[in-house]
Image (cartoon, rainbow over all chains, first blue to last red):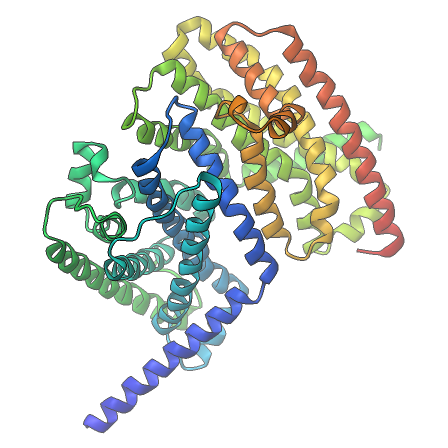
Length: 271
Length: 254
């Protein structure tokens, strides 16, 4: 019995790794697109920061340090929702998911594997953003606690993988799902730890109570070394891990139901 | 069928296509509130923001958003036709593709002008009262004229986009560059001189200044004239460039 269970786990792990490799190959198969995103990043950042200065601000030192992580957090939300969440919908339209299911794999394994590939890709995004801030604004990014920063990025990506996959199953039947995504890419970060708690008591209250916010708060805490919420870091880390595990469980449930529906009547989503 | 009838048919068809996705039009109205509102919220934690400053930034972000869409319109249309295998038929048909491009641009510009009005009215009324409301209606003509050079710029770029394999990524790059070069949401005087000059040559900055000037009630005629002249120059360049592209496509294939 134990041998059979080990075999199943081994098989599942191998399936997920295969999906990860496939996902990475697909993401890196277009080097021109990679170069374009490398060039675009500093342009967007310059636009974003200059637009803030358009309100009469003069951004310096610690504020710019915080803006690095605001930018990266927004980039994570945007990338996971658009590229990953909508990527699943595109795969359905292009018929890729039929082959995935036909191969004996499951929707959850496929999403998890592609998500791991995306996580690696999003690290490249972080490097580009750090380099861009350094290039455009002459800021040397601070990273006070690399281990905490790394853990927070993994937790943030796992949370967003879950949110994006649940979301894509919910909007799969909509004709203009992109409109909802466009709105959500502003709403979700606002309640999900995008803004530093130092900005206002209201933001602090959101960041303390939103399950989505903890990994993003930890990200800034790992980088700047400042405890934003006043709660012990270990407690924050445990809460973030627990919330991420719950989200992953929910994502499994949603994908399992969508998988069954897709096999039964060929349509993605839950409706 | 006269050219005018054909243009009418294209416009009718385009309106039908756009009306299939009312969510897209709703987004044009809502999105400036998210972007201008979001940046205003961030900025408000670091400095005090008054309503006049917000109004200026709101119009600036509107200009950036509409400019991006207008620049992409021509190239996106040609790319979608090519990817769907319809561009060959289009080029082989007796209707000049420029007429079709004109029809699609009129529809897109009209939709954006309408969305701009719906989006601007609450802010203009909130800041300048009834006079602001009236002036936001009169600013629509300026916006329509100001969108034309952007369309010309888009056609000018469509040749490059069509030749590039990763056209989506290139459009992404053009979008980020156009946002930065709009000079609509920040003071351009802080930039290096060459960049400031480039921004002044491009139509987005002047469109922003003209619209904001009109809504405030201080539009100078020189800005309106600049937009009209820019519309002629950029549209001429776009038409010339598209003519060359079409000849090349007919000679060498797509």
